[in-house]
Image 1 (cartoon, rainbow, N blue to C red):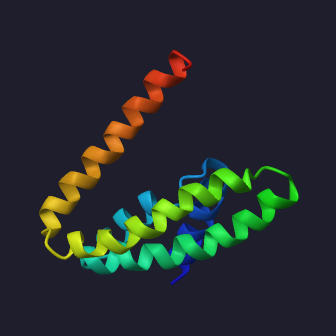
Image 2 (image 1 turned 30 degrees about the vertical axis):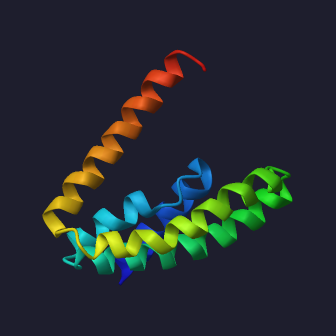
Length: 119
């Protein structure tokens, strides 16, 4: 339990600092803790939601939120969030790990390249 709380602290700091939500850390951690992929993904959304509410309050106090853009993105995201779990039900744990790893590596490469050549 202490390990989970300490890891949660780290996730909270990294999530509110980077805007990445924390799921990219929570899911691998829960899979490492031998949780089934679908359970890890679902649980990570609870974690992300609670961290996100706290981060919105903190960033809102600092004036760091574009509410219009956020609401537009959320509108599409809410619809997409209803589709994702149905897709996940048909993906094996092994395939999920491969897709997730490729996604993380792809985002990392994109961020590395774009940081050198501003868009």
